[in-house]
Amino acid sequence: MTNTPTNAPTSAPHNTPTDTQHNTPTPPLGLLSGKVILVTGAGRGIGAAAARLFAREGARVLLAARTEAQLKAVTEEIRAAGGTAGHVVCDLADATSVRAAVERTVELYGRLDAAFNNGATGVPPAPLDQVWEEDFDRVCAVNLKGTWLAMAAEVKAIRATAGTGALVNTSSVGGLMGNPQLPAYGATKRAVDSLTLSAAVTYGPEGIRVNAIAPGTTLTEMLHDWEAESPGVIERLNADTPLRRAADPDEIAQAAAWLLSDRASYVTGTVLRVDGGMLA
Image 1 (cartoon, helix red, strand yellow):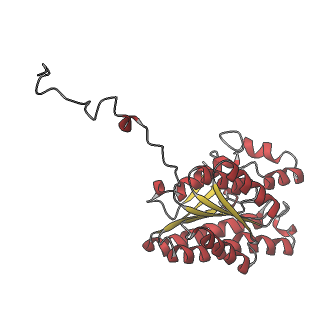
Image 2 (tube, rainbow, N blue to C red):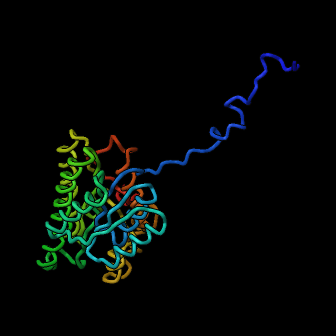
Image 3 (tube, rainbow, N blue to C red):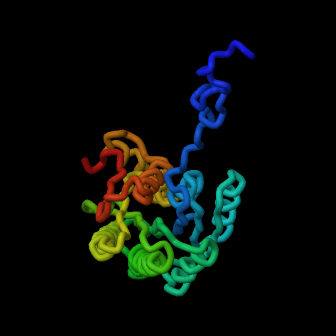
């Protein structure tokens, strides 16, 4: 016989440090884990930053834009970092092209959970009476009609696959105030806000949330083009911004990621200013 007490444990209890199962930390889930997200305007600027961020946060992304070389470069960068990404050339001014991009997302990943409608075009800065008609038509076709086409196709795809989901449209603080140098651009962004609110009311009962972000001064190619046309504009815009600087595209993408995530599950019909306090 042994002298071991009859009530002594014969093995270590499950809550002791020898139980490695309980000491292995659970890897944190990404903000967008499991979601399939379409990103338009994804070849550069805010769209490219968003595609990279969404992939890092666990989403499978499809990048859409007009320039294949840019799309390919960003897609390969995401894959090299361990993310899941594909790309499709898309002209937002062409209805067939927009619908094909949405269909390609579903074909590639089997579903659509969310979309970031970020693609846009600008026009040379000028007062309203000096805007060329062809420039006005183009900015309306891409920024306004393109967003409308994308939203309509995305809602249809979400209904048919994921059932519920979220859309985020890129607006601008330039559409929330008088915009004497970019009147056509500002008008299209104000119209995007209206589409956003209407869609939020329409599709909320189905569990499809629709929001917009309104970036302030952001270091994109469009801003640098404006600076080339109007030297000193970035400095002047920064002087009107309480944070006294322009945003990095990733800072804008962070706001879009949150709105597309389940952490914003009770947020819809909002135009979220991400502007460094410019309109405060």
